Length: 130
Image (cartoon, rainbow, N blue to C red; front, side, top):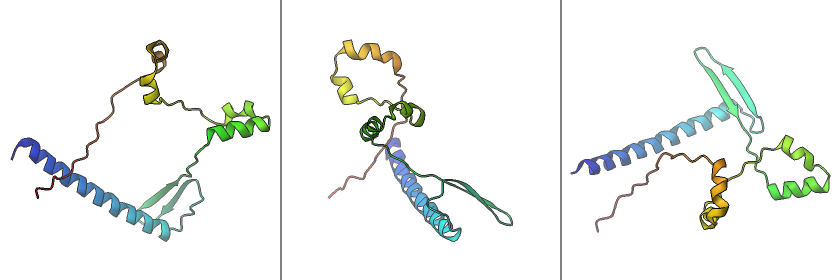
């Protein structure tokens, strides 16, 4: 067996152990949520003190914004000037459109973009030898 094959086997084993650990931890968190009667609509931090432990629970609510609808409603109610105070506007690159655009368009815009390499992700599956 080669070094790479050994690393692949170790990676698969670690990935499985990680998935099982995450699943187990989340099940415990679900039980704690029920036992501590955590309000699903609460947003913020709640602490519970026990003899030897403090359990701090941070709850968040997820909000998704339909930007087009938001701008339409703001325009209807003359609230457009408030949008920049109440919302952050996060531009994201449409990489397919970016790559399809002319250099004369994208090159000047590069000054506003910082590109850094991300951590590579792996997916390894066993090949059936049937």
